[in-house]
Length: 272
Image 1 (cartoon, rainbow, N blue to C red):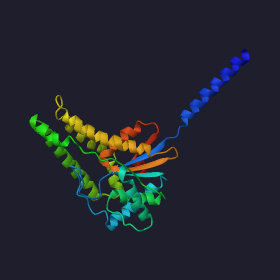
Image 2: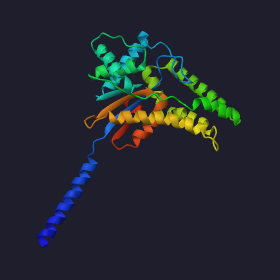
Image 3: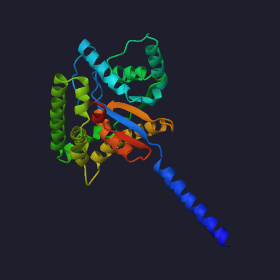
Image 4: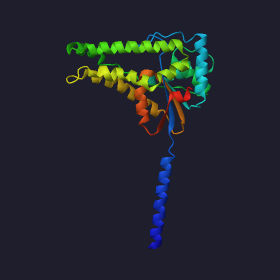
């Protein structure tokens, strides 16, 4: 009995040690979230920049410098803000680009995404976006008018306009690397998300909650994007780069930080 008891104790101890070691050595995929402005206009965004010429020689040189820096991450995947359903279409474009048969459009998805993926010798660039119609937008203004809450939408518009003007000033004075470092600071990410959480969510509160429903649609889109991201990452991926409009980043960052399969990398630790 003493021998069996000792053997059981040893086996249990080994199990605990093995389990603890497995937990401690669990592989986490590093993910770098790069929030950016859209290089081309117009888009469907209510508030957006009238961007400068990102095809100009100076900007093209800056894009080369940026992607050379990002190349040092040896990322296994590059993900862009294009619908998941358009993957085959972008596979075709990217393959043509690899064969020097396609000239990049002005879009940051291609100017940064395609350019970087090619430098990393990736065979594919991953499309992870999902397009949702904001069904409650049409009811937002009507509810605000009915409930004497138009001041909320006016404040939102003024704040967003000032926000865009602030970013526009930075765009005009900085390199693309400098712009991205600025856009991905904690303060700027919070400022973007606050447009939804400080103003929009209040509309109809206590009655029909149209504001809350409108904000939930924005969260739903980002949850769907997040689902596409994590299902396209496999166990072998050590590093992933996601390039998306800056407004998406606060929510995506929160979601990924709370998934223990991932380690979120701060932009300013890479773009020095």
